[in-house]
Length: 451
Image 1 (tube, rainbow, N blue to C red):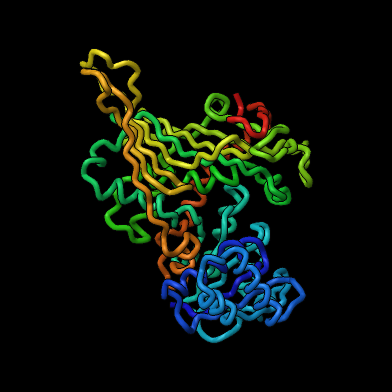
Image 2 (cartoon, rainbow, N blue to C red; image 1 turned 30 degrees about the vertical axis):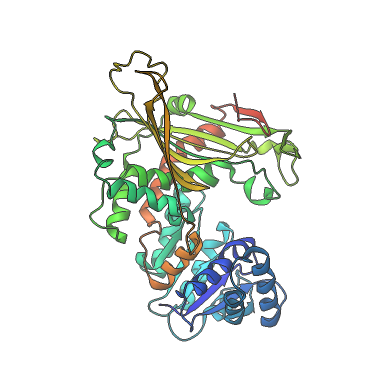
């Protein structure tokens, strides 16, 4: 296990909300070595004592469910370096030390190329690793250039392009349900499955994130990475093992099989929209275009939908619907596998029988199978649902990812060619949207989305 973790962007929101609580969780679970040290790197004017006080405050706010002993251990392992990440000499000084180091870039993606180049000049010790948060580049060309720079720094298995969705319990349960249950795998194909919906709809509005979100939008923020990763797990062929090579090879196969979208396809199979003023619960929500920091002329979408088809033997005839939206009436975060209807119903009082749906709940986590059972009268049918509630994991998703980084397990990280293929899928959509081929629809905040 690597014992030096250097965290660039050490005073940011990602660090406060997710990385520090993840370290506390790992300590509480006994999975963090006693010798592990954390070096925070940021431009903030503070020393190590100030930084430890800041960590304690953030853990109280975002990690208060963990015991005080675990939170205190994270505080004790930390020190701080005030550093300008655009200064190569300062970056080299921040990572200097004995033994391999894990360098986590909790930074805006625009800074990645410069920091990675500076790390290359710093000559990281053998066995070091680097961690990057999505998005990996701003487009296909940017992803290729970033991969080139990373390849000059470290071997591919030492580069961790992390997506915390892959470490969520229910996402992992997709693999378990598919690959460990004989009753499902024979049905897991286009002969039996009509549509797969991969949905992340939330009541959350912009919430002060205009500086990031208005330059990205729903398609880049969610579909290009998180939802395409879920598509890979649902649609991939069974891997030989769940090791980094076998698992990631099969995921890349899925992305390569996505049928390229023509301009006509984009017009027919995609939608984009943004929210108008409305009300969610007891909150009055202003229009997205009126939010502080938003440039209305940019036409950034807060709702995006894309319907894909895979050119593969297994999935011929199945539609994959990826959808995400903000400021909606209700939370819906799930993967819904919709089976085709049975060819014949011999029941006298069948009525409207809905097809079977297997739902993997992402947030909250759970598993539901919608079936049809018997009703109150003879030969009458009625809906029946079987639900399994998932036990909350001892270690959150970011804890799992941090542990993988420190121990060197790259199976859940995104390989360079996978990042490029993800951009290949969405680039025709981005180009068509930017040229105005698909209108920017509108929907009231607190509604079900565009009509």
